[in-house]
Image (cartoon, rainbow, N blue to C red; front, top):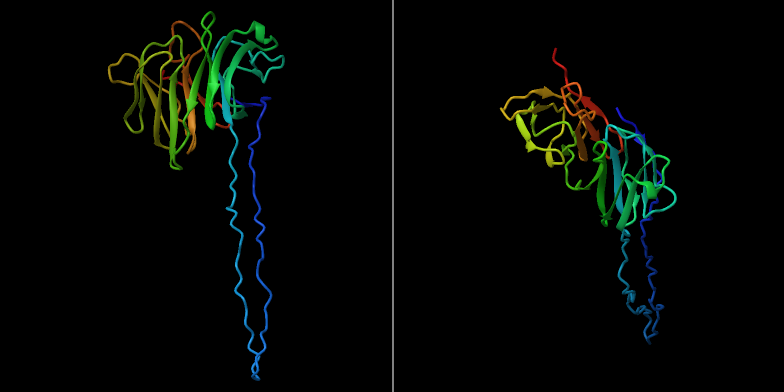
Length: 273
């Protein structure tokens, strides 16, 4: 199981402006009007509230969130620089580990992913990408030597439901061809003809899950990964990955699940003798 990585990402404040009402008491004094009779009944003037100021509400300022996972099997620890700054915002993210969502400013940014200890100028992967207001984002470091990439995802984790889980299945195994994914407990095909770089998002009832892989499109499961249960009401990114070998077998494939708290549990293929 992976461990969460602590990252030093500059956060922004959620700006709000509250308002206080100060009601104005415009009531008049009670006047007593004397009469010529023995009765002294008081006559009062009704009060009127002259405060017409509407109540104010707090509005969050712009923000976005970003999490990062490392699933490139032959890469060492990685640093991340934003806008070619001298100091990285993420240090020493190792293979199979990830970060939790962290607040980031909104806008278009230049990202440089470098080997740990190297600066932005010597990055392995660089690109421009937006971070949208009130949007959750994921970056995944993938690939093998000569073909390293960082894939970016917009994470729609709204309205998942307390009894459900939303999973983005992503094919990140360089040595694995086109596959079908089958949820074996329910007998449901999760994804068909999934190739390297492809993703599919599925929302389903939460609970124990067993995923099988059909390698040759014959409708039969060839591998089964270890059973897992990832909780409820969240979006989890699961990467089908391997150890980078060009010829893959069941001992080299595994799943990395990137949860919103940064944990990255691993499920291996159940090896059948």
